[in-house]
Image (cartoon, rainbow, N blue to C red; front, side):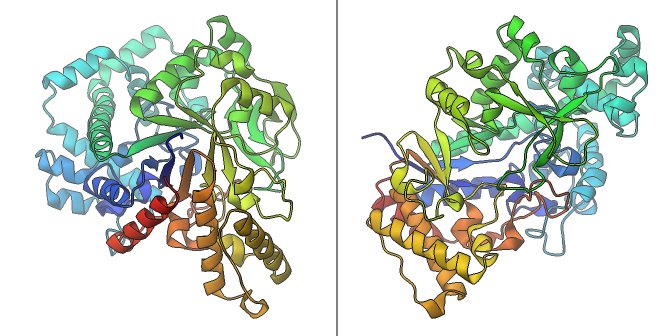
Length: 508
Protein backbone atom coordinates (compact mmCIF):
# COMPACT_ATOMS: atom_id res chain seq x y z
CA UNK A 1 0.00 0.00 0.00
CA UNK A 2 1.27 3.47 -0.87
CA UNK A 3 2.38 5.85 1.87
CA UNK A 4 -0.43 8.19 2.90
CA UNK A 5 0.31 11.72 3.98
CA UNK A 6 -1.48 14.13 6.29
CA UNK A 7 -0.55 17.80 6.36
CA UNK A 8 -1.58 21.33 7.27
CA UNK A 9 -1.79 24.48 5.16
CA UNK A 10 -0.51 27.60 6.92
CA UNK A 11 1.24 30.59 5.33
CA UNK A 12 4.50 31.62 6.99
CA UNK A 13 3.06 35.13 7.37
CA UNK A 14 0.36 33.69 9.67
CA UNK A 15 2.81 32.37 12.26
CA UNK A 16 2.65 33.97 15.74
CA UNK A 17 6.05 35.65 15.75
CA UNK A 18 7.00 39.15 17.01
CA UNK A 19 7.23 42.40 15.05
CA UNK A 20 3.99 42.04 13.08
CA UNK A 21 4.36 39.14 10.65
CA UNK A 22 5.33 35.49 10.73
CA UNK A 23 8.93 34.78 9.81
CA UNK A 24 11.40 31.96 9.24
CA UNK A 25 12.63 32.06 12.84
CA UNK A 26 11.95 30.30 16.12
CA UNK A 27 8.16 30.27 15.82
CA UNK A 28 8.41 28.54 12.44
CA UNK A 29 10.48 25.81 14.08
CA UNK A 30 7.95 25.63 16.90
CA UNK A 31 5.23 25.06 14.31
CA UNK A 32 7.32 22.29 12.75
CA UNK A 33 7.50 20.69 16.22
CA UNK A 34 3.71 20.96 16.49
CA UNK A 35 3.33 19.26 13.10
CA UNK A 36 5.72 16.48 14.05
CA UNK A 37 3.91 15.87 17.33
CA UNK A 38 0.60 15.83 15.44
CA UNK A 39 2.04 13.20 13.04
CA UNK A 40 1.68 15.56 10.11
CA UNK A 41 4.15 14.81 7.34
CA UNK A 42 3.49 17.92 5.25
CA UNK A 43 3.50 21.66 5.80
CA UNK A 44 2.01 23.48 2.84
CA UNK A 45 2.97 27.14 2.63
CA UNK A 46 1.72 29.86 0.30
CA UNK A 47 4.21 31.56 -2.06
CA UNK A 48 7.20 32.98 -0.16
CA UNK A 49 7.85 35.64 -2.80
CA UNK A 50 7.71 39.41 -2.20
CA UNK A 51 4.07 40.47 -2.06
CA UNK A 52 2.70 42.82 -4.69
CA UNK A 53 -0.53 44.57 -5.59
CA UNK A 54 -3.19 43.99 -2.94
CA UNK A 55 -0.52 42.40 -0.69
CA UNK A 56 -0.96 39.22 -2.69
CA UNK A 57 1.81 36.61 -2.91
CA UNK A 58 0.30 35.76 -6.31
CA UNK A 59 1.29 39.17 -7.75
CA UNK A 60 4.98 39.39 -6.92
CA UNK A 61 7.84 41.60 -8.05
CA UNK A 62 9.84 38.43 -8.69
CA UNK A 63 8.75 34.85 -9.25
CA UNK A 64 11.83 33.30 -7.62
CA UNK A 65 12.86 35.78 -4.91
CA UNK A 66 12.15 35.44 -1.21
CA UNK A 67 10.11 38.03 0.66
CA UNK A 68 12.26 40.31 2.84
CA UNK A 69 9.29 40.51 5.24
CA UNK A 70 9.88 36.87 6.20
CA UNK A 71 13.47 37.39 7.34
CA UNK A 72 13.54 36.79 11.07
CA UNK A 73 14.49 39.90 13.02
CA UNK A 74 15.51 38.04 16.17
CA UNK A 75 18.04 36.12 14.08
CA UNK A 76 19.55 39.42 12.89
CA UNK A 77 19.74 40.53 16.53
CA UNK A 78 21.63 37.31 17.37
CA UNK A 79 24.07 38.08 14.54
CA UNK A 80 24.73 41.51 16.05
CA UNK A 81 23.27 43.31 13.04
CA UNK A 82 20.41 44.88 15.00
CA UNK A 83 19.60 45.78 18.59
CA UNK A 84 16.42 44.83 20.39
CA UNK A 85 15.62 48.54 20.73
CA UNK A 86 15.88 49.07 16.96
CA UNK A 87 13.65 46.07 16.32
CA UNK A 88 11.02 47.46 18.69
CA UNK A 89 11.27 50.94 17.17
CA UNK A 90 10.56 49.60 13.69
CA UNK A 91 8.06 46.96 14.80
CA UNK A 92 4.84 46.51 12.85
CA UNK A 93 3.11 44.58 15.64
CA UNK A 94 -0.16 45.29 17.39
CA UNK A 95 -0.33 45.76 21.18
CA UNK A 96 0.02 41.99 21.61
CA UNK A 97 3.02 41.54 19.35
CA UNK A 98 2.57 37.80 18.78
CA UNK A 99 -0.91 38.05 17.25
CA UNK A 100 -3.01 40.59 15.39
CA UNK A 101 -3.38 40.85 11.63
CA UNK A 102 -0.47 41.55 9.31
CA UNK A 103 -0.25 45.28 8.56
CA UNK A 104 1.35 45.32 5.11
CA UNK A 105 1.41 49.11 4.91
CA UNK A 106 3.44 49.27 8.11
CA UNK A 107 5.74 46.54 6.82
CA UNK A 108 6.35 48.50 3.62
CA UNK A 109 7.41 51.63 5.46
CA UNK A 110 9.28 50.07 8.41
CA UNK A 111 10.70 46.66 7.55
CA UNK A 112 12.93 47.67 4.64
CA UNK A 113 14.55 50.57 6.59
CA UNK A 114 15.18 48.15 9.49
CA UNK A 115 16.82 45.63 7.16
CA UNK A 116 18.96 48.42 5.73
CA UNK A 117 20.26 49.14 9.23
CA UNK A 118 21.19 45.46 9.53
CA UNK A 119 22.92 45.54 6.16
CA UNK A 120 24.94 48.61 7.16
CA UNK A 121 26.62 46.41 9.80
CA UNK A 122 26.90 43.29 7.67
CA UNK A 123 30.39 42.12 6.68
CA UNK A 124 30.28 42.11 2.89
CA UNK A 125 33.54 40.16 2.78
CA UNK A 126 31.94 37.03 4.27
CA UNK A 127 33.00 34.24 1.85
CA UNK A 128 29.45 32.85 1.64
CA UNK A 129 28.06 36.23 0.63
CA UNK A 130 30.79 36.76 -1.97
CA UNK A 131 30.02 33.33 -3.42
CA UNK A 132 26.32 34.20 -3.45
CA UNK A 133 27.09 37.38 -5.42
CA UNK A 134 29.36 35.50 -7.81
CA UNK A 135 26.55 33.17 -8.82
CA UNK A 136 24.54 36.21 -9.91
CA UNK A 137 21.26 34.40 -9.41
CA UNK A 138 19.48 37.50 -8.13
CA UNK A 139 21.25 40.17 -10.17
CA UNK A 140 18.11 41.04 -12.15
CA UNK A 141 15.99 41.18 -9.00
CA UNK A 142 18.46 43.38 -7.14
CA UNK A 143 18.75 45.78 -10.09
CA UNK A 144 14.97 45.86 -10.59
CA UNK A 145 14.31 46.66 -6.94
CA UNK A 146 17.04 49.31 -6.81
CA UNK A 147 15.64 51.07 -9.88
CA UNK A 148 12.10 50.72 -8.55
CA UNK A 149 13.18 52.30 -5.27
CA UNK A 150 14.82 55.16 -7.20
CA UNK A 151 11.46 55.71 -8.94
CA UNK A 152 9.66 56.06 -5.58
CA UNK A 153 8.40 52.46 -5.85
CA UNK A 154 6.29 53.25 -8.92
CA UNK A 155 5.37 50.56 -11.41
CA UNK A 156 7.70 49.46 -14.20
CA UNK A 157 5.44 50.98 -16.85
CA UNK A 158 6.08 54.50 -15.43
CA UNK A 159 9.89 54.33 -15.30
CA UNK A 160 12.18 56.46 -17.42
CA UNK A 161 12.37 54.77 -20.81
CA UNK A 162 16.13 54.17 -20.63
CA UNK A 163 15.64 52.07 -17.50
CA UNK A 164 12.35 50.49 -18.53
CA UNK A 165 13.90 49.25 -21.79
CA UNK A 166 17.21 48.28 -20.15
CA UNK A 167 19.44 50.60 -22.12
CA UNK A 168 22.85 49.04 -21.52
CA UNK A 169 24.80 52.23 -20.86
CA UNK A 170 22.12 53.73 -18.61
CA UNK A 171 21.82 50.49 -16.67
CA UNK A 172 25.58 50.19 -16.13
CA UNK A 173 25.77 53.79 -14.93
CA UNK A 174 22.86 53.32 -12.54
CA UNK A 175 24.24 50.12 -11.04
CA UNK A 176 27.65 51.72 -10.52
CA UNK A 177 26.19 54.83 -8.90
CA UNK A 178 23.84 52.84 -6.65
CA UNK A 179 26.06 49.93 -5.68
CA UNK A 180 25.07 49.97 -1.99
CA UNK A 181 21.35 49.78 -2.78
CA UNK A 182 21.88 46.96 -5.28
CA UNK A 183 24.00 45.05 -2.75
CA UNK A 184 21.31 45.55 -0.12
CA UNK A 185 18.75 43.78 -2.28
CA UNK A 186 21.23 40.95 -2.84
CA UNK A 187 21.62 40.79 0.94
CA UNK A 188 17.87 40.32 1.43
CA UNK A 189 18.02 37.22 -0.75
CA UNK A 190 21.20 35.91 0.85
CA UNK A 191 19.71 36.16 4.33
CA UNK A 192 16.26 34.91 3.31
CA UNK A 193 17.63 31.74 1.74
CA UNK A 194 20.13 31.20 4.54
CA UNK A 195 17.25 31.21 7.04
CA UNK A 196 14.94 29.24 4.75
CA UNK A 197 17.45 26.44 4.16
CA UNK A 198 18.00 26.16 7.92
CA UNK A 199 14.25 25.93 8.53
CA UNK A 200 13.70 23.35 5.79
CA UNK A 201 16.56 21.20 7.10
CA UNK A 202 15.03 21.39 10.58
CA UNK A 203 11.62 20.33 9.23
CA UNK A 204 13.01 17.45 7.19
CA UNK A 205 14.98 16.21 10.20
CA UNK A 206 11.70 16.10 12.15
CA UNK A 207 10.01 14.07 9.39
CA UNK A 208 8.09 17.03 7.96
CA UNK A 209 8.26 17.81 4.24
CA UNK A 210 7.39 21.24 2.88
CA UNK A 211 5.05 21.81 -0.03
CA UNK A 212 5.62 25.07 -1.84
CA UNK A 213 3.10 26.96 -3.91
CA UNK A 214 3.88 28.33 -7.37
CA UNK A 215 1.62 30.95 -8.96
CA UNK A 216 1.05 30.28 -12.66
CA UNK A 217 1.50 33.92 -13.66
CA UNK A 218 3.87 36.74 -12.73
CA UNK A 219 3.04 40.41 -12.18
CA UNK A 220 3.23 43.02 -14.95
CA UNK A 221 5.38 45.01 -12.51
CA UNK A 222 8.01 42.31 -12.08
CA UNK A 223 11.63 41.39 -12.59
CA UNK A 224 10.63 38.80 -15.19
CA UNK A 225 8.64 41.20 -17.40
CA UNK A 226 11.50 43.73 -17.15
CA UNK A 227 14.32 41.26 -17.83
CA UNK A 228 12.53 38.99 -20.34
CA UNK A 229 9.73 40.94 -22.07
CA UNK A 230 9.97 38.60 -25.07
CA UNK A 231 8.41 35.83 -22.95
CA UNK A 232 5.14 37.74 -22.55
CA UNK A 233 2.37 39.00 -24.82
CA UNK A 234 3.05 42.74 -24.74
CA UNK A 235 2.60 45.56 -27.25
CA UNK A 236 5.42 47.78 -28.52
CA UNK A 237 5.24 49.90 -25.37
CA UNK A 238 5.68 46.83 -23.19
CA UNK A 239 2.04 46.85 -22.07
CA UNK A 240 -0.33 43.86 -22.30
CA UNK A 241 -3.46 44.21 -24.40
CA UNK A 242 -5.04 41.18 -22.71
CA UNK A 243 -4.52 40.00 -19.16
CA UNK A 244 -5.03 36.87 -17.07
CA UNK A 245 -7.99 35.81 -14.96
CA UNK A 246 -10.83 33.32 -14.89
CA UNK A 247 -14.49 33.67 -15.90
CA UNK A 248 -17.32 33.63 -13.37
CA UNK A 249 -17.33 30.48 -11.22
CA UNK A 250 -17.97 29.24 -7.68
CA UNK A 251 -15.57 31.78 -6.20
CA UNK A 252 -16.91 34.92 -7.90
CA UNK A 253 -19.94 35.83 -10.01
CA UNK A 254 -17.85 38.47 -11.82
CA UNK A 255 -14.98 36.06 -12.38
CA UNK A 256 -11.48 36.87 -11.19
CA UNK A 257 -9.58 39.68 -12.90
CA UNK A 258 -5.96 39.00 -11.94
CA UNK A 259 -4.43 41.44 -14.43
CA UNK A 260 -1.20 39.48 -14.97
CA UNK A 261 0.44 39.54 -18.41
CA UNK A 262 -0.02 36.40 -20.47
CA UNK A 263 2.83 34.17 -21.62
CA UNK A 264 4.07 34.12 -25.19
CA UNK A 265 3.86 30.36 -25.41
CA UNK A 266 5.00 30.28 -29.03
CA UNK A 267 8.22 32.06 -28.09
CA UNK A 268 8.72 29.81 -25.06
CA UNK A 269 8.30 26.74 -27.24
CA UNK A 270 11.30 27.74 -29.37
CA UNK A 271 13.78 26.88 -26.62
CA UNK A 272 11.84 23.97 -25.18
CA UNK A 273 10.20 26.05 -22.43
CA UNK A 274 13.61 26.65 -20.82
CA UNK A 275 12.36 29.46 -18.55
CA UNK A 276 9.64 27.24 -17.11
CA UNK A 277 11.99 24.29 -16.70
CA UNK A 278 14.46 26.40 -14.72
CA UNK A 279 11.66 27.88 -12.62
CA UNK A 280 10.38 24.40 -11.73
CA UNK A 281 13.87 23.09 -10.99
CA UNK A 282 14.55 25.96 -8.62
CA UNK A 283 11.24 25.42 -6.82
CA UNK A 284 11.94 21.71 -6.40
CA UNK A 285 15.33 22.46 -4.83
CA UNK A 286 13.66 24.89 -2.44
CA UNK A 287 10.71 22.64 -1.49
CA UNK A 288 10.11 18.91 -1.22
CA UNK A 289 7.14 19.13 -3.57
CA UNK A 290 5.36 21.98 -5.32
CA UNK A 291 1.71 22.83 -5.95
CA UNK A 292 1.21 24.77 -9.20
CA UNK A 293 -1.68 27.19 -8.93
CA UNK A 294 -4.24 27.33 -11.77
CA UNK A 295 -2.73 24.31 -13.54
CA UNK A 296 -5.60 24.26 -16.01
CA UNK A 297 -4.00 27.34 -17.60
CA UNK A 298 -1.41 25.08 -19.24
CA UNK A 299 -4.19 23.46 -21.25
CA UNK A 300 -6.18 26.59 -22.10
CA UNK A 301 -6.00 30.06 -20.60
CA UNK A 302 -8.54 32.85 -20.31
CA UNK A 303 -7.65 36.28 -21.73
CA UNK A 304 -9.48 39.43 -20.63
CA UNK A 305 -9.18 42.73 -22.54
CA UNK A 306 -6.85 45.05 -20.62
CA UNK A 307 -8.80 47.80 -18.89
CA UNK A 308 -11.93 45.73 -18.22
CA UNK A 309 -13.41 46.12 -14.75
CA UNK A 310 -14.21 42.42 -14.32
CA UNK A 311 -13.62 39.05 -15.94
CA UNK A 312 -17.07 38.48 -17.44
CA UNK A 313 -15.82 39.15 -20.96
CA UNK A 314 -12.84 37.21 -22.28
CA UNK A 315 -11.75 34.43 -24.61
CA UNK A 316 -9.90 31.16 -24.32
CA UNK A 317 -6.57 30.30 -25.98
CA UNK A 318 -4.64 27.05 -26.12
CA UNK A 319 -1.67 26.69 -23.79
CA UNK A 320 1.37 24.40 -24.17
CA UNK A 321 -0.53 21.40 -22.77
CA UNK A 322 1.53 18.35 -21.78
CA UNK A 323 4.39 19.28 -24.12
CA UNK A 324 5.85 21.54 -21.42
CA UNK A 325 5.96 18.62 -18.98
CA UNK A 326 7.58 15.98 -21.18
CA UNK A 327 10.34 14.32 -19.19
CA UNK A 328 8.98 15.82 -15.97
CA UNK A 329 6.30 13.24 -15.22
CA UNK A 330 8.14 12.00 -12.13
CA UNK A 331 8.74 15.48 -10.70
CA UNK A 332 7.02 16.08 -7.37
CA UNK A 333 4.28 18.39 -8.59
CA UNK A 334 0.71 18.85 -7.36
CA UNK A 335 -1.70 20.30 -9.92
CA UNK A 336 -4.39 22.74 -8.78
CA UNK A 337 -7.06 21.60 -11.22
CA UNK A 338 -10.03 23.54 -9.84
CA UNK A 339 -12.33 25.91 -11.71
CA UNK A 340 -13.89 25.36 -15.14
CA UNK A 341 -12.79 21.89 -16.20
CA UNK A 342 -13.19 20.23 -19.60
CA UNK A 343 -11.86 17.24 -21.52
CA UNK A 344 -8.57 19.04 -22.22
CA UNK A 345 -7.84 19.54 -18.54
CA UNK A 346 -8.67 15.93 -17.70
CA UNK A 347 -6.42 14.77 -20.55
CA UNK A 348 -3.57 17.00 -19.31
CA UNK A 349 -3.93 15.56 -15.81
CA UNK A 350 -3.86 11.99 -17.13
CA UNK A 351 -0.85 12.57 -19.36
CA UNK A 352 1.27 14.29 -16.71
CA UNK A 353 0.17 11.91 -13.95
CA UNK A 354 0.27 14.67 -11.34
CA UNK A 355 -2.12 14.47 -8.38
CA UNK A 356 -5.09 16.83 -8.57
CA UNK A 357 -7.10 18.51 -5.82
CA UNK A 358 -10.40 17.46 -4.23
CA UNK A 359 -12.07 20.12 -2.09
CA UNK A 360 -14.78 19.05 0.35
CA UNK A 361 -16.39 22.49 0.31
CA UNK A 362 -17.66 21.50 -3.16
CA UNK A 363 -18.62 17.92 -2.25
CA UNK A 364 -21.97 17.88 -0.48
CA UNK A 365 -24.46 18.87 -3.17
CA UNK A 366 -26.64 15.75 -3.07
CA UNK A 367 -24.98 14.10 -6.06
CA UNK A 368 -23.44 10.73 -5.08
CA UNK A 369 -21.23 10.86 -8.19
CA UNK A 370 -19.69 14.24 -7.25
CA UNK A 371 -15.92 13.81 -7.81
CA UNK A 372 -15.12 15.81 -4.67
CA UNK A 373 -16.87 13.31 -2.38
CA UNK A 374 -14.30 11.24 -0.43
CA UNK A 375 -15.89 7.96 -1.50
CA UNK A 376 -15.11 8.86 -5.13
CA UNK A 377 -11.50 9.97 -4.63
CA UNK A 378 -8.73 8.15 -6.42
CA UNK A 379 -5.37 7.48 -4.79
CA UNK A 380 -3.59 10.07 -6.94
CA UNK A 381 -5.29 13.02 -5.25
CA UNK A 382 -4.84 15.69 -2.61
CA UNK A 383 -7.87 16.27 -0.39
CA UNK A 384 -8.63 19.64 1.21
CA UNK A 385 -11.55 20.76 3.31
CA UNK A 386 -10.97 24.14 1.64
CA UNK A 387 -8.23 26.23 0.05
CA UNK A 388 -6.77 29.66 0.85
CA UNK A 389 -9.41 31.12 -1.50
CA UNK A 390 -12.37 29.42 0.21
CA UNK A 391 -14.45 30.37 3.18
CA UNK A 392 -13.39 28.41 6.21
CA UNK A 393 -15.55 25.32 6.72
CA UNK A 394 -17.39 26.97 9.62
CA UNK A 395 -17.90 30.20 7.67
CA UNK A 396 -19.31 28.15 4.79
CA UNK A 397 -21.94 26.64 7.09
CA UNK A 398 -22.70 29.92 8.84
CA UNK A 399 -23.43 31.63 5.51
CA UNK A 400 -26.02 29.03 4.46
CA UNK A 401 -29.74 29.49 4.97
CA UNK A 402 -31.46 26.78 6.99
CA UNK A 403 -32.70 24.75 4.01
CA UNK A 404 -29.29 24.76 2.32
CA UNK A 405 -27.55 23.79 5.54
CA UNK A 406 -30.01 20.93 6.11
CA UNK A 407 -29.36 19.59 2.61
CA UNK A 408 -25.61 19.89 3.22
CA UNK A 409 -25.89 18.02 6.53
CA UNK A 410 -28.03 15.29 4.98
CA UNK A 411 -25.51 14.72 2.20
CA UNK A 412 -22.60 14.82 4.64
CA UNK A 413 -24.39 12.25 6.78
CA UNK A 414 -24.88 9.98 3.76
CA UNK A 415 -21.25 10.31 2.75
CA UNK A 416 -20.09 9.53 6.27
CA UNK A 417 -22.17 6.37 6.18
CA UNK A 418 -20.60 5.35 2.85
CA UNK A 419 -17.17 5.91 4.39
CA UNK A 420 -17.94 3.91 7.54
CA UNK A 421 -18.21 7.02 9.72
CA UNK A 422 -21.11 8.70 11.47
CA UNK A 423 -22.67 12.15 11.54
CA UNK A 424 -26.21 12.73 12.81
CA UNK A 425 -28.21 15.77 13.88
CA UNK A 426 -31.80 16.64 14.78
CA UNK A 427 -33.96 19.32 13.18
CA UNK A 428 -33.69 21.62 16.19
CA UNK A 429 -29.87 21.45 15.96
CA UNK A 430 -29.51 22.81 12.42
CA UNK A 431 -28.56 26.33 13.50
CA UNK A 432 -26.47 25.41 16.52
CA UNK A 433 -22.74 26.20 16.49
CA UNK A 434 -22.05 22.84 18.13
CA UNK A 435 -23.61 21.05 15.16
CA UNK A 436 -21.47 23.03 12.73
CA UNK A 437 -18.37 22.03 14.65
CA UNK A 438 -19.42 18.37 14.63
CA UNK A 439 -20.00 18.61 10.86
CA UNK A 440 -16.51 20.05 10.43
CA UNK A 441 -15.00 17.22 12.46
CA UNK A 442 -16.99 14.66 10.45
CA UNK A 443 -15.68 16.16 7.21
CA UNK A 444 -12.12 15.89 8.51
CA UNK A 445 -12.63 12.24 9.47
CA UNK A 446 -13.87 11.25 6.01
CA UNK A 447 -11.14 13.33 4.35
CA UNK A 448 -8.59 11.31 6.33
CA UNK A 449 -10.40 8.08 5.44
CA UNK A 450 -10.26 8.88 1.72
CA UNK A 451 -8.17 6.75 -0.62
CA UNK A 452 -6.26 9.88 -1.60
CA UNK A 453 -2.52 9.84 -1.00
CA UNK A 454 -2.53 13.33 0.54
CA UNK A 455 -4.88 15.09 2.94
CA UNK A 456 -4.10 18.73 3.72
CA UNK A 457 -6.23 20.80 6.07
CA UNK A 458 -6.07 24.59 6.37
CA UNK A 459 -5.18 25.29 9.99
CA UNK A 460 -8.38 27.35 10.27
CA UNK A 461 -10.42 24.19 9.63
CA UNK A 462 -8.38 22.26 12.18
CA UNK A 463 -9.16 24.99 14.72
CA UNK A 464 -12.80 25.42 13.67
CA UNK A 465 -12.57 29.18 13.20
CA UNK A 466 -14.96 31.33 11.16
CA UNK A 467 -14.95 34.29 8.80
CA UNK A 468 -12.46 36.24 10.90
CA UNK A 469 -9.73 33.81 9.85
CA UNK A 470 -10.40 33.61 6.11
CA UNK A 471 -7.12 34.01 4.20
CA UNK A 472 -8.34 35.48 0.91
CA UNK A 473 -11.54 36.52 -0.81
CA UNK A 474 -10.81 36.34 -4.57
CA UNK A 475 -11.59 39.40 -6.63
CA UNK A 476 -11.99 41.65 -3.57
CA UNK A 477 -9.37 44.20 -2.52
CA UNK A 478 -9.28 44.23 1.26
CA UNK A 479 -6.71 44.67 4.03
CA UNK A 480 -8.17 41.50 5.52
CA UNK A 481 -6.83 39.41 2.64
CA UNK A 482 -3.56 37.58 3.41
CA UNK A 483 -3.42 39.14 6.89
CA UNK A 484 -4.81 36.52 9.31
CA UNK A 485 -2.45 35.20 11.98
CA UNK A 486 -2.80 32.33 14.42
CA UNK A 487 -2.43 32.71 18.17
CA UNK A 488 0.37 30.61 19.60
CA UNK A 489 -1.74 29.54 22.57
CA UNK A 490 -4.11 27.50 20.37
CA UNK A 491 -1.32 25.22 19.06
CA UNK A 492 -1.52 23.03 22.13
CA UNK A 493 -0.21 19.57 22.96
CA UNK A 494 -3.83 18.48 23.31
CA UNK A 495 -4.62 19.57 19.75
CA UNK A 496 -1.48 17.85 18.45
CA UNK A 497 -2.46 14.62 20.19
CA UNK A 498 -6.00 14.80 18.79
CA UNK A 499 -4.62 15.18 15.27
CA UNK A 500 -2.10 12.39 15.84
CA UNK A 501 -4.88 10.04 16.98
CA UNK A 502 -6.94 10.88 13.87
CA UNK A 503 -3.90 10.23 11.67
CA UNK A 504 -3.26 6.87 13.33
CA UNK A 505 -6.88 5.74 12.96
CA UNK A 506 -6.78 6.65 9.26
CA UNK A 507 -3.48 4.82 8.74
CA UNK A 508 -1.70 7.94 7.50
